[in-house]
Amino acid sequence: MMENLSNPESIDALNELDNLSDKWIVMVETSAEKMVGNSLSIIKHLIDNGSVGIILSASRPYNNLLNLYEKNGIDTSKILFIDCISKSQKIDLAQQGNVIYHNAVSDLTNISLSIRKTLDKIPGEKFVFIDSITTMLIHNNPEIFTRFVHGMITKLRLEGVSGFLISIEEESDNMIRSSIAELCDKVINI
Image 1: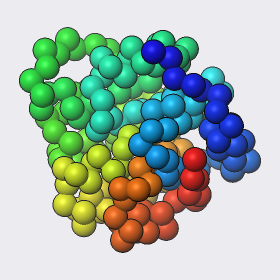
Image 2: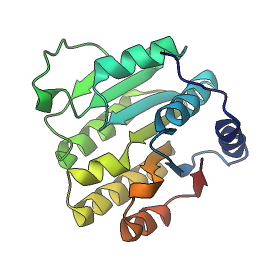
Image 3: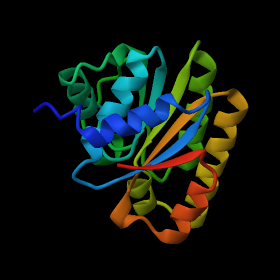
Image 4: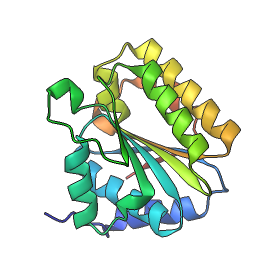
C-alpha cells in the first residue's frame, strides 16, 4: 500500500524545512495515524534534495521499511538503516550492505556508536532520522534516554549533520518532550 506523500500538512512541514538554515535539528510531532506518511514525505524530500540518511528504526524492522520506502519511490541506496527491532524478535536476518542490526532498542550505547561510526563514512550532505522517540521511550529509562538524545544532538551539531526526531504527540511525556524540544532548532506539528 502506498502512503499519501502529498498531504497539505506534510507539504507545509517540508516548506518549513526548506526555510531552515543548514544543519538543523527538528522534532516532528505527529499523530499515530499520520506518522508513517509524514515520515515518508520528509525522508523522500531529504533524499530527493541530495542528502544521504541514517534511519534509526525503533518501530519497524528493516525489511518492512525497505519495502515501504521502495513502494513510495524513495532511493534506498542513499540510506543506511539501523534496525533495533529484528534481532530482538528473532527474525531471520540476511546481512545487507545498508543495514546494521542491534540487539534491542535499549542498547543505546551501541546504537550511538553505530551512528557515530557511520557518520564518519558518509560523504556530503547527510541526516539522521530517529523513528520514533516515543517508541524508544517505551524501552528505555526516560532520564537515560534524554541523555542519549542530548549526546546524539550534540554530536550531530559538532559534525554539521541535520537531524530529525519523530514523536507521537498524544503519547509524549511532557517533561521528556520539553527536555528534547529545547535541544532542537524547531518543533513542527503535523
